Amino acid sequence: MSRLSDTCFSEDELPPALRTKADAYADQGGLLGAFTYFFTVLETDDEALAETLGSIPTDLFVTSALHDDAIDEADAWDTDRKRRLNEHVSLGDLVYANVVEAVSEVPDDIDLSPVLETVREIGAGQLAEEEFDAATASVDDAIGRIEERGSVWGDLAVRVVAATGRYSDAQLEHLRTIATNGLFVLTVIDDLADLPEDIDNGVATLPLVCFDGDPDDYASTEAVIEAVLASDVPDRIEDLVARRRGEIDAAATELAASLERSNEALLAAAARALTWYCESLCSVPVAETVSAAEQREIRERLTGDERSTRRYVDERIAEYERQPPVDAAEVAATVADLPDEPVVRTAIRLRHLESIVDDLMHTTLEDALAELRTATAPAP
Image (cartoon, rainbow, N blue to C red; front, side):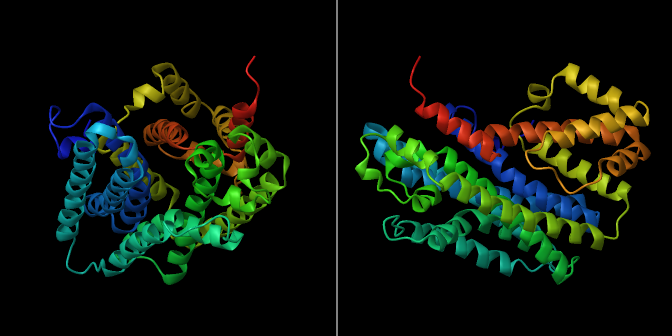
């Protein structure tokens, strides 16, 4: 299985910890790449183009993350600070060289200039982050900061898709709503879960801006978290997340209605995007997250009768914290009518993708709040 770090350094040249970090960032950035790949291959049927365009947001994300670490973690590196700074910055630069190469490979009729503008916005957002002060910031300021450092990556992926020229302005706006709000929600949830670390490091995020108290007035980080949990902060964040998810649902419904593609075509595009992510990018083998027994169960249930398929679909939909706006019976009937093998492969890889996402970040408010409550619970 190919890993991004393998393309930049040999096994001996890259420290194991940094290799693991780079691969984790590629796993995360690759989610943007898979999004880009899917919508590119859906309308162009060009796997080479989809792979090239999908690599751009993936590698830009890795570059940005490595350079961020060179800034954020440098003070803790002590005696080997220079070496580790050099490793992070150099690896980030080498990954960025992949972006330059990818851009040089796209056809002449694809204009990536708008993508460059978004890259500039990402850089400007990083500079502005140093000036953010929770003591004077409003909730709108904090929301704007999340959009600058999180949602903007969704805009980047959509602009890459837009460069293909295959989507209308309305469709691109739906895609932008889905991508930017999706990343906004994940960033808010992750910021909530990371509250203890952010308090200790003096990092101001939305949960603290929403909090009416002053963290300096409390005796410990645990006391601040308890006060935040007892305040209206969880409810305010839940309302904000619900509004953004409502916008995602509406945009997804409109986009689905506008795509003149058969269920078979959608499945084929999803299968190709997941294959690219799982086999060419992700550092974690599918077998590590979806056991052989679970893969057999998925196969048996999706290749059985429609009742078995319906139960599987019902169970999968029920796993989501917030029920998606779909008709489970219609989904099950559609799945039952599609070719068995592509459906099974896609279901297995989708399960793998979900596992990767869950390992990389918190995806539900419920989990984030549970982790905070655990962090403040007295030791037994």
